[in-house]
Image (cartoon, rainbow, N blue to C red; front, top):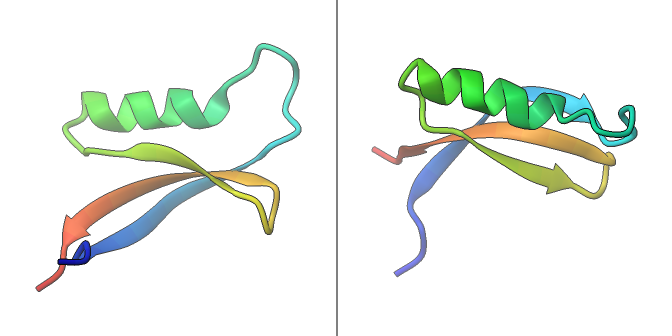
Length: 58
C-alpha cells in the first residue's frame, strides 16, 4: 500500500550555505523540540533543502 500522507513544506534553505552551516537541520531540530515531527529533504530541482512535516491523509 502506498504512503498516504500529506507533506507540508515548513521552510526552504539554499543548498549553497557557508561551510559548516546546517540551517535546515537546525530549523528541523527547533521544530522537533516544539513537538512537530519534521525531516530535511533535498529538492534537486531547486537546489534547496526543505524542512517538511508529514501528516496522515484524511
